[in-house]
Length: 266
Image (cartoon, rainbow, N blue to C red):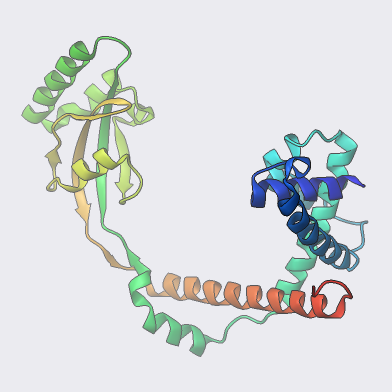
């Protein structure tokens, strides 16, 4: 059994059965072997379409990076890893060439789809945010007292936020006076997000506790949700529809290949 086959078997067993191939029970072993034989024959048929020579090194590097821990965690030699990467690069090339056979959607189709899905093309509400963090390494009460003192100073004058963040904050944003920039929902820890999006414009949060320590947040400005720029929205819609068409074409091609290959339909 060559390297790419051992790699494929490991990956299939781990991803679908959360097990090494040799550790599967009898029932799972039968299902695994059937799935593997089907996958193996499909991969062999696909790579036969792509010559093994004249493959750009940067493409191999990208594939090697995408395989990541699967390669490093399988006990393969450098030569075996190179063979596995080559095999998967040929698969990638075949699917990329298939995708390029699909024409881009025409402008009228893109326009119609965009008009029916405009809610997907909204820029979310964002808040221009500054952040100050005190981590808790030992004396919890002392850190709590310190964050309360900083809160009092900043409440008296928001101009104090940047210099105090530069001096005391243990967040990387301290280098820029605590400035995080425009923040949307989903980017911060839940308790910080709740505190930030409850603030009015130019308001300072009370001290907020998290697993990292104590935080202060200043909402400098609020940018309401708004429609995305129409040109960018249409580009995104076109790319989405094109990707969907490419994936359909690839699936149909695979089904046709399977139907033509003896032993793959069972």
